[in-house]
Image 1 (cartoon, rainbow, N blue to C red):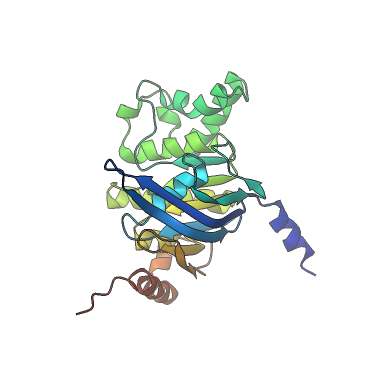
Image 2 (cartoon, rainbow, N blue to C red):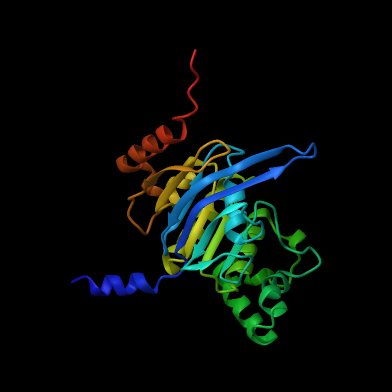
Length: 270
């Protein structure tokens, strides 16, 4: 009983297990500041995991540790049973600020990763890039340069730039921050559709509660630094989702629960 479901679950990649993770930095005066302390958490594969918390709580540091761009002081991160020792093609990251090279066309930006690693031929890379750019509504801009694109179009190009690497895990660090409301909502729908089509394991960092509720399978709440993941909230809104879900009674119930978790440590005592 349930063997079909279990087999499907076994095929999913991107099972992240973090144990006793600690990371601190030394300031210019030589003082050490602990950002993440004794963090232990598990992110299940094939789920859209959202990490929230107040500014400066260590969300981005956690993302960089998972991506392998910085090393932990103590503790471990394992993906599908393998320790993270540095960056790898199984993980790709979309940053807060644009990562597109301004002197390259959109297509050249997208194909750069696999070409520099000599994984596939130039012709195959460009074919894959065109499929992705078509999906993200950018095929007519494939020969344009980043400064000829809107903010939302740059974000879509960066997601295509990440996906061409065929990763097991997508890491997005507040990718839609600073965009206008309409563009932000459009990109949320783009990414949600992508996730629902692929079930690509995702770690999504955001400070926006509405964004987290709309996207997440589970929201993880970080305390103020030095911190760890304090609590998690399952978001049991049906998929596929549209913005109509934000008007449902269940959405409003979950929003209240999430607010209680987020602001539990923010109460001012007189």
